Image (tube, rainbow, N blue to C red):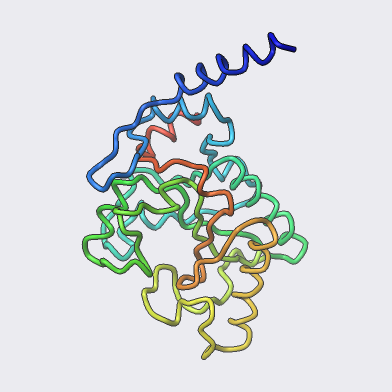
Length: 233
């Protein structure tokens, strides 16, 4: 028994020694800067792996607007049309998809993990923390623990009616906005309720945005999407 207690501090010391050293940025945030450092964090905790949602969630659809000019910045921000989430968040999203399928509904995802450098670029033209994350705090998208999505009709493949288009920066996009048709309110509630049941928290100002409840355990990341895409091949 004494030997076990003697070994424990050594194991803890080794674990700490293997943790990557990340220097704080200009805001005092520690942001994982590259693929190699991200790999180190994953070796220490497999839940920190970023999964390609198209592989992790059977039948899911993606529409990555930030890989096209069809977004509020009016230019492509991502070099590849890929959506990644941390492993527990991706698995929870698969549970949401399984729940919705018997109802004739499915998920369409607009965004997941977002490199920190993109958050910096988005902040400049908007500078409104209700709709764009302040890089001085970082985004839950930067942690791979937030997802933007909507519902689709599985028969037609079309999105069902929601309060606004994606990335609408008006009060109408809020979770509690009430001056809407009854069916739109019901659709918003259907998405929100399914996500909440599986461990996601809604963002009050955006009907499409949900944070996985375990987000604080995940580091901010600035790993390029194209490198993650190659990693998952």
